[in-house]
Image 1: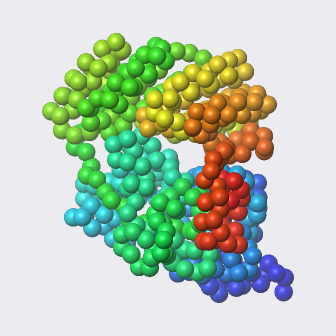
Image 2: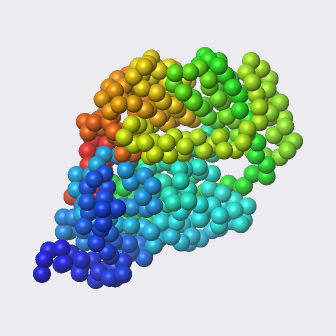
Image 3: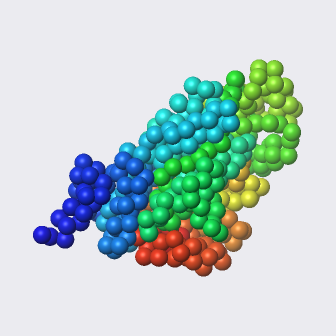
Length: 424
């Protein structure tokens, strides 16, 4: 019996033959081809398959909807894909307490549709909600413009269950089953790219659906004007739910500031009136809600032309974001074109277009300048940047601690080896 046949049989004994299949080229991760795809139907089965892989020395790639499977560095190894596709149930919605417990394979769209029946929502606007799963969104820490009103993803998460490589199903926070002493698992697992454990379920705090929403867009023809308006909005008493700046082209001077108001008709009217007094030097007009799809549009444009584009995520102090874009414009000049969508929380998505060598040069210098100011630049997706352009950049002095946590929870580096910061 070949080793491959033996692995398949042992996995089938744990999860059932219907839950395992040979991997195809479509299952590859950044060009690395796994052997099998395993889709357990319970978190106990998932934990058992993960334990087997850990003991057999097999590298495991956790997968939800595969919408962000190309984020991070290429894995050093990939033997098994452990899919949460069958873990897709909403386990408990306590609508009176504004909480929900959901399995990791449930798509964000399915979750929101179920919550909406009770007039509630998870105040999260992640990319591709029709396909992105709860576990994948948590693992990549993907959230959009709503975080300025409702907080980051870690603020919405109140409990989590992780399958660890040693077979433990560890829970922390709300709805506790078993605690791992000394670790705040919800915060550790969020954004860890599945390198510490595989998320099997999560507990979230919810918010009511808004009665009315209105989107207002202010047009500024200079970076300085946009920066002043943004600063005024951040310092105001306005209770907006979202705030972003669109930069349609790095080589032009048009800046579009979008503001989302939610509430009652009378309350929104008062908010808009206050906004107009703050933005008296700019053009103010009501916009279509589609402007909030601008971040996703940049990702779609990059996917449509991967051979001549690079997608970057910038993280800076909110007051420094527009200055960073001005720096990028100076670096790019005639070498590349691009556009950006910036969140008022200091996060942003930048799409650059041009030749591979030019984009690598621009991204390298831009990262150095942003990091020197205390910010960070991450490369998203299958970028055309050279392989020596790390997806994450500098980790500062946090890397030893991160490696220590990785060593404690995944000592054999079974999960997503090499994909996270510092080669974790």
